[in-house]
Image 1: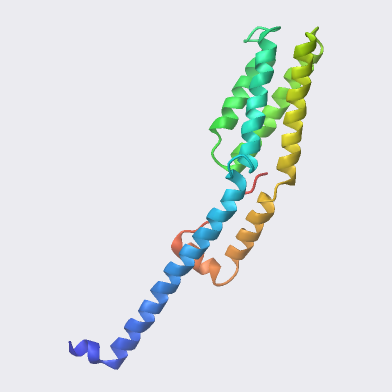
Image 2: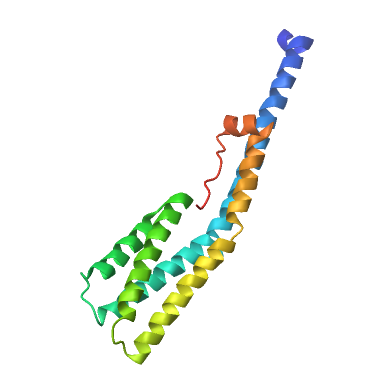
Length: 178
């Protein structure tokens, strides 16, 4: 008990409590800011993830139309299936971006192939609607504020004292969608 009455030990304990509470508080704040920024990417229906889900759905619709005119093992149809699966399995923004780019190429190839066939009027209309929806979702993703938000977060994480506190608490920079 005499240790607690010692001013030097009390000062050290007080400083230690202040440092620990600062690190814990900073980690919680940085973690919260990171989650808010990640939410811009994955907000249900309105973030990039919602747009990617819709692109995936429209790519599937293209394969349904193609199923009426082409074999399922036709290279353009199989490619859309493969690229769509890759997009649905991608975990990080960068992986999702690369997978989405590959799916767009495959969907455009299938659309071009279908466009050269004699489609029913209804299927021609569905094909056009699918491609309009895919292209509009690509435009929405391009206009998304996620990359700007992620850049601002990453820049804030690079500044003092966040650069030290972020490392100490395990808060990492966000990956961009590019």
